[in-house]
Length: 291
Image (cartoon, rainbow, N blue to C red):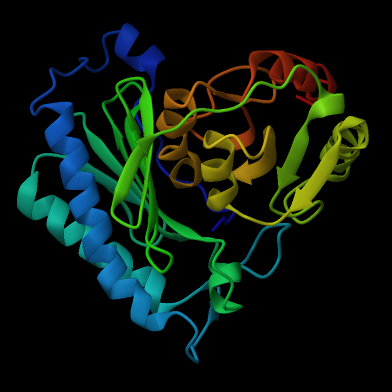
């Protein structure tokens, strides 16, 4: 889910390079951290699932141009469970979450959490939402997990690879080849709600050149891109917790995840994910007009 409030940024590569903070040694093997991320997803799923497709009290915390911005007890309790396990297992790590803010750690590692990305879909009983869990090492997200706890689907990316698990099976995944916009399937969560008028015009130019456009999906669309079913996801007004888990998944599957000007997207804003460098380059030529 998105909202317009400002959050304290994760330490950037530029700050590390300047000597303001030190690049940390990996205090645990990445495989161990990946296993812990899956444990987090299992635990949060147990909390969130009972709230799906039942009558909920919904609070509107919207203040930005997107208007209605729902949050539920499922969002809050899901993040509380994630934070509890992180502090019990890695007490020196920081946590940044959509619902409960930023808690700095003693180590540069920060877990970046969105318990329900796609709360609008969640409250409508639609399954196109997920739990996002990322680990940022002080420079960039090095581990990302997307979990759909109702359909029991999970994507995870780290160490230059991405995997998908469902029904007890786990397999390596990759994006598909897409030479140009004319061959591309393009998606965004909403064609106008998160875009300024200028951004809407750029997106519609992009969509008009594509083979097909679909709307909706939130984080779920990025999982489908990593599996080779979608070629481009283009969005704006995102926050760090909306994107950091998705970056290692997309990149591990062979795709690209950047800002609209081709730069670092880990702090959100205007982002584009692409499965093929060729269609990414063509899309950037359109999006850079407002970047």
